Length: 151
View 1: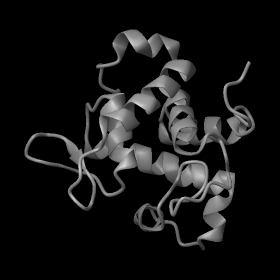
View 2 (view 1 turned 90 degrees about the vertical axis):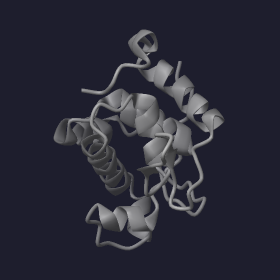
View 3 (view 1 turned 180 degrees about the horizontal axis):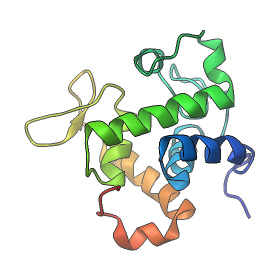
View 4 (view 1 turned 30 degrees about the vertical axis):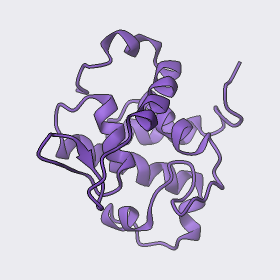
């Protein structure tokens, strides 16, 4: 039984983006679950299923309007492109750290090696813990290898 309404509604788009960018399906689904609970109309200032910020979308080459970012296909494509970019920027990062980087907007690492956002604030552990619960749900095998880096 699905945990979230619409949990499987976007599978075709997710699988396509995952294959195109080489990002695990479970990673995309866990991110969507934590960011928007699979609500394509989610608007907290960040936009849609993957809660994309407009500057991040522009950094990943998006040239459309804010309204277009609510389209599930566009939102998942941009969000997955951003995950792939982060994987390249921070090679060998664990899934937890990758989500922390995704959530921070314009990530960088501080002197302690923690991901910080554009304001210099570190990512709150509780937020990552919520993502872990979603990741465990979509990829139960991951639980035992939680600290393992993404390939």
